[in-house]
Image 1 (tube, rainbow over the protein chains, first blue to last red):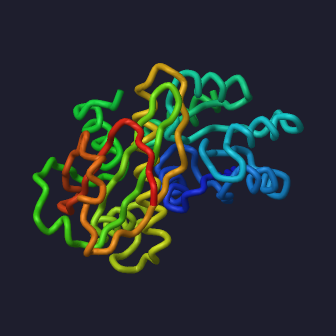
Image 2 (image 1 turned 60 degrees about the horizontal axis):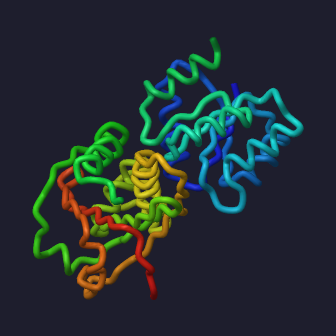
Length: 120
Length: 153
């Protein structure tokens, strides 16, 4: 499985990568991008199975990235890992084509629940 | 309306203890806090609610947090990664505070800057609306928050 992590914080990308290793997802290849614009390019280049994306980022936000992605790609699984946590935000994410939204701070357990529901 | 201290305490616990595995304890501010070089990380919520939060971490504390986030050996991280880590912490705090609001609001990107040791937090007196001084893995740190104010250089 190939996973694209999109987050402007290098520290958070590191934490997500480390936490993925503690979930049941098994072995995966991880590629990274620092904002939505870069993420769009990486989806084309790397063809990930899953995108894990922050919401607030410079240049292109996570929701803008998702909405642009869904114009041409309805297949790639997409989940937000973000400090945004309101119901409106969650609804916008799902309505725009995300499979889930995990709120930071998160744990391996909370991420695992969402990853498992995606595979169910 | 600014978030209450109990909610802020819970958010700090979630960030540092549950996610990063770093113990926290509420502390009294110490005299030495005001003379150390430190990082300030701010984030703002605007909209129906307007709130400004500033995390104040002595450099040593900031490095400790960053080393935990990056799983790095002590003293090996460049300044840029320490700033990145502290910015992400205040981003999580701000996002969780925003999540307590029922009305629409927006979260800024975090801003992190280094304050020289000779500067004191008296320059930031307007943040005194609410403050929690605490320790993270035994290192001092503080969070200050208030309803939004205009910040000028």
